[in-house]
Length: 97
Image (cartoon, rainbow, N blue to C red; front, top):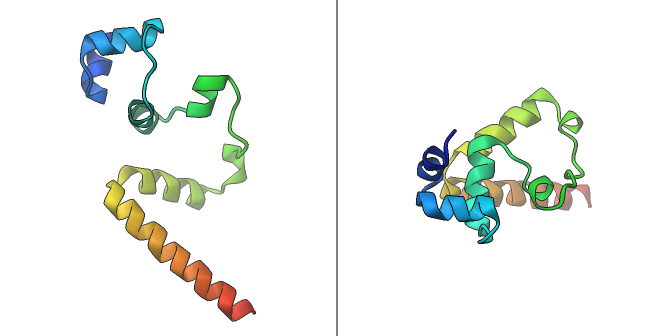
């Protein structure tokens, strides 16, 4: 993929992409999030060389598919799902007590 193609895919101009790659500008979090979402990159690994603690093998196939599906939906829908899960977890905790 060329710089121009990557810049277009992520929504930045080619010069900005070139600056990020050359290290003359730091890529902001929203840019890194878009790159991670589009290409499945592990951002902590890119920034620090350290992989995240949760190994992919720690999740079963259903959990992996849920994560992929969750990441593919709009942010507002992700927030709604988080609210639903939090409510369900709170309800489950109340019933355990």
